[in-house]
Image (cartoon, rainbow, N blue to C red; front, top):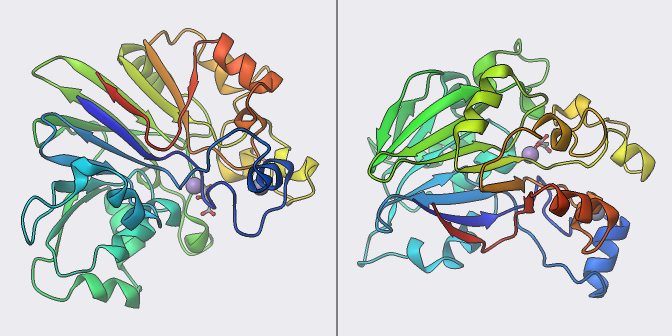
Length: 299
Ligand code: MLT
Ligand code: MN
Ligand code: ZN
């Protein structure tokens, strides 16, 4: 299985347009020694010819251009066979509207995520320009789907409604999932959980069985935004398990020994983005990597 990180950042990217936090400030000044990050999306393929996109970020156009494997091979063509959504947050879905150039697309999502994006959304009509422009395929927890030589199994992950749907409907398990992706030919297994507020026993078992794990790296600490004076929400309020601390994901996933363990969906405020910081060192010492745009791996 081939994996390409198209974007490693959480919503807003790094640096974020309206953010002057120490990370964004030093990144703009060129003194941080890190690379800018676009919003989270990953491409996976069994054969290098047909690709699945995991999430469609607002930066999808530039992300596709940045990755030669995703370029057209004919006058009208795309190697992107399907897009798989893990939740309905705009940093995961907004890119769908950028794929409106009259090309049939296949989108795999839970019923909840499909409805949240397509119902009561006048802009969605741009993807209804002709019959069959979007084919939705339903992801249901514990039901496996074959896609381009890969077997996709969605797993419920504790999360939340997208911000634009808060208050409009009850929370439902299908609003946030992780993905287990199996290449049956090689037996390689990827576990992809870019958003999770906790680790269930079922998630832990799936993460332990994978050769490569991507996990929610949004915040280092619960009060990260509050301590920086950037907002009033704790990580928990946004349904993101922090990386650090006694109850954080580094501790919770200490028994996960996958050869590749990668944090993704990293918020621009996260101190682990600072090369050489104590937080970055702690992550590295635990055997975890921090995703960056353009990262490639073969499982
Ligand atoms: C999140 O990951 O919590 C959301 O993307 C936040 C947002 O939609 O701004
Ligand atoms: Mn997000
Ligand atoms: Zn910032």
